[in-house]
Amino acid sequence: MSSRPETIPLPLRLRLAILAGGNALRGLASTWRYRVLDDQHYRALRESRTPFIFSLWHGQLLPLIWHHRNQRVAILVSEHRDGELIARIAQSMGYQLIRGSTTRGGGRALLALVRELKAGTVVAVTPDGPRGPARQFAPGALVAAQRSNAPVLPIAACVDRAWTLSSWDRFVIPKPFARITVAYGAATNVEAASAREAVTRSAAFEELMADAVHRACSS
Image (cartoon, rainbow, N blue to C red; front, side, top):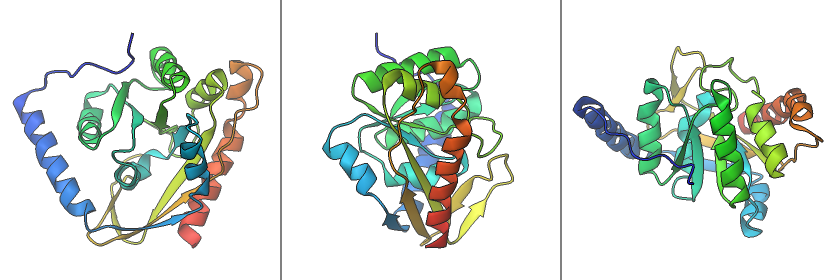
C-alpha cells in the first residue's frame, strides 16, 4: 500500500488561497539568486542512487523547497490544517507528500518514511516541525534513518534579505532579488543498534545542522 495520500477535497476559499499562494511564490522565487556550498555530498548520493533524508529546519523551508523543486523528493508534511497551504504548494512544485509528523501521532509517519526510503525514495524532513521547539532535532527522522539504513543529509540556507515571521520557527520569506546561500553537510548514518539508541543521537545531529547553518551564513 502506498504511503502517499489521496488528494483531499478542499473548500473553495482554501483552493483559491493555494492557487494565489503558488503563483505569488513562483513569481517571487524567480528573482532569487542562489549560491551553493559543498553540494558534492548531495551529488554523490544522487549519482549513486542512494536514498537519503534531507534534514532542514522548519524556518528555512521556503527557499530550500524551491531550490530542490521537481527533483523527485517526497516531503513529510503536517496533517494540521495550517500545514495544508504549504503542502499543496509543495505538491505543485513536484514534491510527493507524506502526511504526518515525527513528533505528534508519529507512528504512521515513521512507517511511511521507512517504507519510502526502502523503496529508494529521497525524503525531506523538518526535524523541529511542525510545532517546535525551533532547531531541536526530534528523534523521528533518526529512527527512520536507523531502521532504513539511510543517511541523513543536513541542508541549510542563509538569506541576505528576507521577511521573518513572528512564528515559533522565525519562518523566512526571501525578499525579491534576495541572495540565498545553501550549504550541505556530509551524509551521515545513524550509528545505532536500535531505535531507542538512535533517539540518543539528537544532539550530534543538531551540531551537524548548526555547522551547515554557520557555513551558509558565514560564507
